[in-house]
Amino acid sequence: MPEAGPRSGFVSNTFVPAAHPGPGKGTVVHHDTDVVTTAQGAVRGMRKDTATVFLNIPYAAPPRGAGRFAPPRPHEPWDGVRDATAPGPNAPQAARGLGEVDMSPYFGTGWSRGEDHLTVNVWRPADADGDLPVMVFVHGGGFVAGSTRSALYDGAAFARHGVVLVTVNYRLGIPGFLDLPGAPANRGLLDVVAALRWVRENITAFGGDRRNVTIFGQSAGATIVGGVLAAPEATGLFQRAIVQSGSGSGAFTPEQARRVSEAAAEALGVERHADAFAEVSDERLVEAVGRLAAVDLRTGTHFDPLVGLSPVGLVLDTQPARSVAAGLGADVDLLIGTNAEEGNLYLVPVGEHAASTTADVHAVAARTHPDPERLVEAYRASRPEASPGELRSAILGDAAFGAGSRALADAHATHPRSRTFGYEFAWRSTAMGGALGAAHTVELPFVFDRTHLPRLHGPHGLLGPQRPPADLAARMHGAWVRFARTGDPGWEPYTTERRATMRIDAEWTLIDDPRGQERRAWSPGNRHP
Image 1 (cartoon, helix red, strand yellow):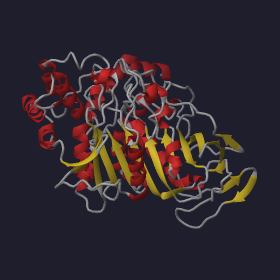
Image 2 (cartoon, helix red, strand yellow):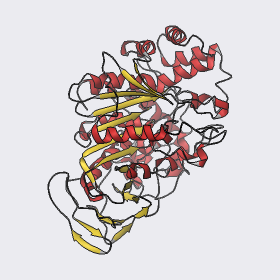
Image 3 (cartoon, helix red, strand yellow):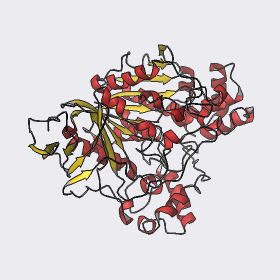
Image 4 (tube, one colour):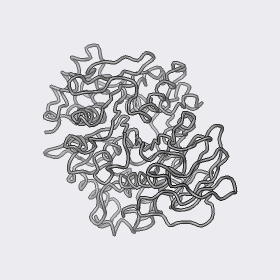
């Protein structure tokens, strides 16, 4: 899309010409505005307390037919005012759950059908008057699920604290990430880049400052953010990035991706080419994803970077951490971290944590590391009182998220033109009798200041029956907002000499290299066969 400011704006029902004061400036958003004009056309949002919300705004054309396997294209302009007061469709996906924990606030309601699903939601302060920091969120869901409709991603708290929040839908599963001849790789990532271009072109009309954009994501969304950080085509589209429980070394190699696409072609009975896949219905593509979990992705040089958690994801010749070490993203400030017990989410709700044995610990180590005995010894040395379930969870969590996050943090910290900040979220959920702990996803309600949601509580809610510390959400949400506004979350930077990391719990503690022994066990020279 060409770089341009908004053509015009509307205040109530009165036409107001757009202002053109220079880069980063645009239409002044008045207090009673509920209609904004984007480069594609006008949209009408709705007021919700102190925020104005615009839902289901297209940033790219509907991916129909063969277009599902093509790069994102600009959306056609529309006449009149497009209603932006109701949620829209999302990417095709199967219903998702994780055993005994209620993950509906995270995954949402599943597939809401409709082709025009490459859309964003925008929250802005009701009294926005321009030049506000912008945050662009990329949801998680294993590259196969999730959407902007999920209850956790309501942006009211960000708007209340002076941020314009944009949440992004992108292609998932086979249309989004299966690597196929005749199609560009990483189409879901290309969607996110297209959304960032939409932000650059249009966000001034919503009161945002396009010179102050922070992209952030969680889980698969965070891994995509790492990929965007290392993508040359995204250079200049954002100034800051936040990576929550992602990985800078979570991309499949082309060889691994080919194995997955061959299995998908066999499952569907079609040729391994984008033209053949374009003839397959969305329903069959969604169903086929579930048959790819058994693909063996270990090669002579690499393990499965997602440890079996998803059969599709980014496909790159060079991992994002290495690209960042070489200089990509060197001008972007980075906040990056993980949760203290990431692996618990994949073990506790399905009864495997308590049932884990020493053999299970060695099995996960052998699946993820060329010297499994040495890896297990390193974890036992750093966690001498740990049970087999705790060791298994720690190794699984680091294989999927921790090791790759630390690699990305170290790579980024070598560049003097920007700053790196590290965190570890350690507050323990009391769900599942207290066993869920500081698992994957538990930090999200705090970042979005949504801990009050009823479905997050109770014995099977993500946060458990006991209320978290009263100020923890406000403090964590505030740190994310401060980083977006200033590039500093409120603690000392992470450097390769010190590796300062803020441990976020009821009390916040800055710790130097808190997982040093485990980090060294996963160093690049020790990571692959």
